[in-house]
Image (cartoon, rainbow, N blue to C red; front, side, top):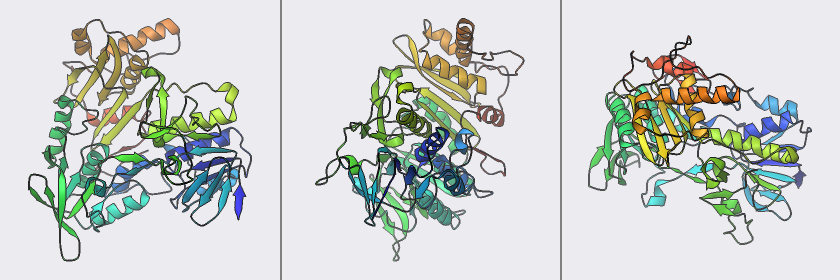
Length: 492
């Protein structure tokens, strides 16, 4: 038994939804496209899981956040796919792939053939067992990667108000889940081996601000330490975590966020007779058109390792929703309009929302870090300068014009002749350089500090006190999910 399609998207995450929308816009014929997903629901905006989904009041629930609302596009419900003639094959696992025959074999024994395959399998959460720690199967130990994980975590949180949670990991998931736990009136201790939170991105000075902000809300930090074992009650439920130095921390629930691993198993050639694609940086290697070592197969999102022009075509695997959206669209363009599609020119972009805080980061965080702004009041930023050029920029609490400006100076690798001046001007430097670009190219207008828009740059000594809600609102057009913890307002 089998089915045949012209185009097959393998995976049902964010990238799958954006690829489907692009196919639709390019007039894919009914019956030509299918999406195969292990999940039982149509593709959705995964960032909602660590934000709005965990709110105690008016939580986000499907169908509210199906793709592609995250980019202010239409919402692709199951009805939308049906009307477009796109087949959703849900709750289905593909157990093997034959690239020569262009066949996928599902766990139920069905064969699905394709002319073009887009691999959008994403990544899976790393488990404690991979680091020699047993106990993940306990009923009050949580991971967060899909709807099922989120539902489980919500159910456990509802019974833990006023009790203790331990969060293992100080990265994206650890920080965002901690904010959600605090909003649900749960006492949190964060444990991670690094010297400070978000160590892959934050400098020590940046981390100090966020850690102090969390501490003011009752969060405790245990840094430079790792989990080694659990204590359990007679029913197997975790009652405490034991750290490497012997520290015992009581726990009514545990949330684990220790990283992800790209889902490449079907294509790594390790299984006898298994499909083999070129791999790099832990993902499936693709060219600038998202094409793998097999010309009929493309890879997008977390699973794809692609050349980034901004970094001299260095191969990167980027674990963020913006990359998933844009690589998916580009792959479809390369398939449907190959003569019109060049190499992807992507500017790495990351963002996060916790409590009333809101930050965005562009580029790369290597070189000299130049801090600026008002750290005590939460309105600050950082430039990374390498060989006299800005190659990365971070901004907390900025306005729309400021976020646009810092992205432009990174994209154009703006030259810096005086680091002291850069520190003094702060985001004003980006606004000034962006305006110069506008004047020289006539490509549009970037509002500068002091104009009638009411926007002021983030300076070393700001002239007013920033209000967090205003910064979040102004940035909403770039990063989609702005959830307000502890209040009823929720924005998409």
